[in-house]
Image (cartoon, rainbow, N blue to C red; front, side, top):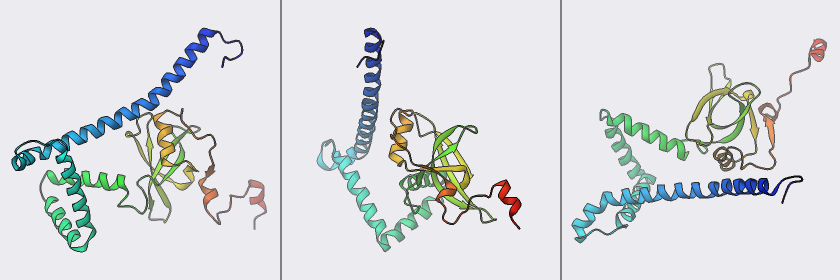
Length: 230
């Protein structure tokens, strides 16, 4: 629909740009997902193809990938029972003693455990919040990743501030709870906002300061009220 006073050429350019950006938001994530899956399929499949050729006398495309999935499932089943868990822990202890390999293996394991959330009570990204960043008066999305307590007993939050439109890079911060603003945004919605640079956003946000979420916490008295306190 033409805006009032808008020429046909401006209307055409505006619609072409809008539809082109909408197409990019649909096509680019789809292409990236397909390429990643194709890369995983090809590389995992190629690892076991020499063994398959030795057994069957020829390469069977896809069989290596299927075998890899079955082996991963078997390892998971082993890790779920007591004996298998003890065996895997013993294997971990041996691998963590190998120089150089130890650093790579331990780092990779910590990343996988952190992203999967298996090492935490909740998922790796527990909650979506707003924080003032990079300076006061400017709000940005952040993910709460963990909760800490200092020696004084004060609660601290570790947060990850992603950069747009690539959320895999960002900033790690440790803040007190009063520095965050809680929201009702889900992690999926926040990711869409970041990747689209805000073009895909919830219509309405429920935003509350951290102190409003804490039961029994009373607001600080005004200067006039303070004078009347005994």
